[in-house]
Image 1 (cartoon, rainbow, N blue to C red):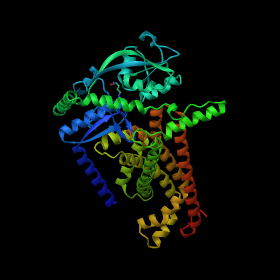
Image 2: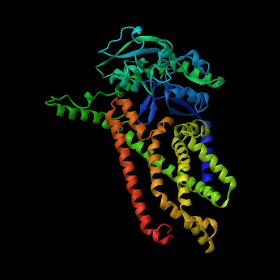
Image 3: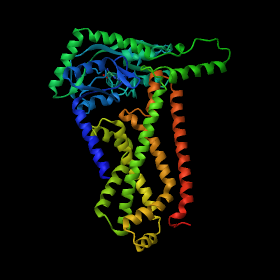
Image 4: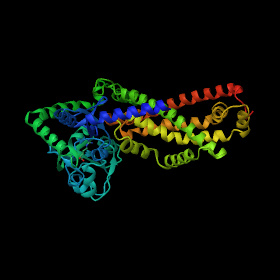
Length: 500
Ligand code: ARG
């Protein structure tokens, strides 16, 4: 236990020390050419600007991917130093953060279906309008049209909704909008609805940092670097969204069956085989994501078991013999808080507040899920302990075993055997629940599928494949648990029986 606590402290200390050195940029990488995922890495114009700031300051550089509506809060809370995500300077935002000088002037446009052409803004009123949550497009619908938009996490998602007829129009910044309509014959773009300037945001009161950002922007504008980045990344992001047509040559399609097969093959190629930018096939998002899911789920199960056993023994010992009054109180508080608040909220609090300075999202997820699951496991194990006849403990003590030894050797093995199905259930729930780690921008299996969807605009294959992989994962796990259960039943003879 001491060793574990010591290593945890070391990890925390290392994270703190590392955090001080590194200049962190908060961004939302579905916004080409300003920021997008090139495989695992975040690339784009904004990234180059912030990297140049880090160079100027002689600091390490790191870009953090998160939802757009978390980008400004990240600099306000100190989780990141810079926010750069094609952020438009607005009066509202200026109240909360300081902006650098602008580095580009651009604007927002309407994306519409050609079958329902857009002519002027009066047409938007009262329609379902898709936007990326927290953006100036969101504010436009709210303030100019005085209505609630349909909010999506990315503008690509809003576009998918447009294509499937879930909304009538989408409003987005011109560059990502161009990316959305590329290769979609049914979609088109309007003229600018309004003009906007992008700048880098920093927390209020960080005048030195702001000055460094301004000097950097002036320098990269003057020496032509900015212009080159714009050209290079626009060219790169143009290639990002491939249409199915470059997957295979158009063939004569003799029947609906073969054309369905053809479009499945095109989609399969687009979603899983086509290189995602760093040269590896897009399917690698799922492979890497699966590894993260397994890693987080297994480690959280183990951590939850440790906590669960401890809390269960404390609670059961207190209820039966009045032992450990203080620990019992702490356990009760822990159970109340953990079971009384939603998992997503706990994850976000751990990420943004408690472990603010910890870099490793995997570690954060493991701790948040382990601590959460520990509460449920504790109650299951406690039920197991109370199901054991008190005579067992008395007999063990009479044979000369100490309380803890009796607990460990006699009571717990039987308790666990009795509640194994319930514990298994908890593990399965935990495994599937980890799919919310996308909230802290950790790329797990679910998020991997989501990224593929956001790059290909294809929904069926990515989501159905992700569902199938989870299913296989859970079925394998259930099978392993069944084996363990049978094994325990058969070897149960060498522990004292209370149930047969
Ligand atoms: N320019 C718009 C805004 O500031 C949208 C930016 C969205 N950026 C992004 N990386 N998704 O609200």
